[in-house]
Length: 217
Image (cartoon, rainbow, N blue to C red):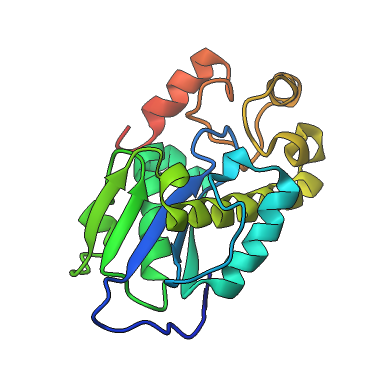
């Protein structure tokens, strides 16, 4: 999933991509990562961490980011894979995929958080310098842009999933562990897009059995 505009930057400049994720703490749905390379000059008023924006502002900015970015890409890791390899590795996998889908290869990766992307999740591709930036979605515009693209894509996906699994209210909480969501889980049990290893999805006894049966857990 990627889009590319004419770069318009000299080869002597360091090509930097901002990387961020959405949905890491959810009980259902995938974790999604965005990667964005912004041009030297852009016009994105209000650009900041996606969590600081309302839905309308995120949607507006997402359209403009896609228009103005040198290139952008998304990476997705499904809920079943989250259960198999754990949420940290699933997040790295989504981030790595977003980077590898970029049509312009970045020389520097600015990754939101306190960890960089392990080499195996970048398919061992050489040439990436990395820096982890705590609260980078508030500090680095390219990371802010990546957070917005990841969040808006994931939110729309959860709205689509709500049509298939109407009883959970995904269109309201987007898979996070709200009271509405937890009450629905108690009444209906989990569905195919729930993360079975996350606390609150299964009754605790069954959750322990589920974790014991998963490979590598």
